[in-house]
Length: 172
Image 1 (cartoon, rainbow, N blue to C red):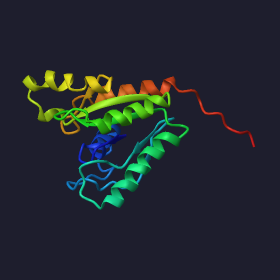
Image 2 (cartoon, rainbow, N blue to C red):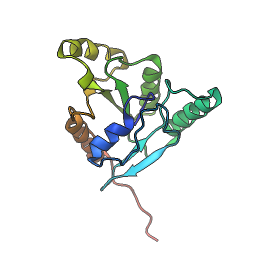
Image 3 (cartoon, helix red, strand yellow):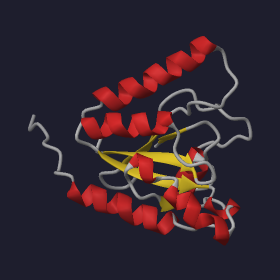
Image 4 (cartoon, helix red, strand yellow):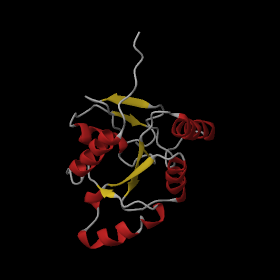
């Protein structure tokens, strides 16, 4: 799971798993500065990638985090999909579009989630959805706060797991 700082990655991870406090949340953007793995029952591992963009930090730290993120997405062999979280009120920026394109270039699926959907009025939602056209994937509108869209995202992730071949294990 990737997205800008303060987009709600940790909150959504907690909502998807149903485990409050599994991923630590903070009111201060940019607290996740490493790659965090969350093993689930079965063949699915959720990965909380560090946020990019908004957080106030040294340029060298921001560059290191961006490099870590892109290296992980480019080199991780068992990466099945990128779940990219984008604030539904803002829509995708060039960074998010580039990230999605890089993962698609590897032949991996991109799942787009429009977060903080509860903060949009019903009259704003149509325009918000149209703002996602440049990323080329219809978003799943979600709210970690009220649970809207969380079940749809869970089902999408489970569908993805079922599409993946079983890992080959050495017999030693």
